[in-house]
Image (cartoon, rainbow, N blue to C red):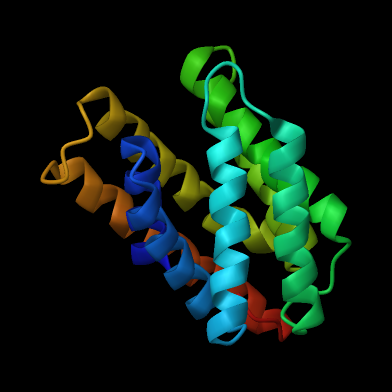
Length: 186
């Protein structure tokens, strides 16, 4: 999942939507296993959420939440999670907002990003905050590598991208371990 998410993030910042869809499809397939058509439809909603979120500063958070709620409804229906789709979508877009603010306003700290991710993970995976903290910390590290990669020009050969990928793989490994301890799928 971490490799697929890294591919999706890189494509997002390069506005390469077909590649982003491929990365998100990999994430959904590996993380939620909704079947071929379900994976594609769910990935489409995640892609659309990111597309309406992408413009800065004039994005559409409500449309992003609507698409992410559709994604979470699909994951619920397949039995992969058991969440209120709107709440999960609100928490998802809240960490996107925290990250966006951190990118443009240094008063928003990595601790703020960490808090928003812990809230999301705790809710979606029904875990205690300290059970998902390590996964969230590693994802914040991945964001730092990603942000540095963006500032450096989004070169696909930049070693920062490999560091981002490693941090995302480690983050998903930590999340998987936390969810396995609780008998859930991450």
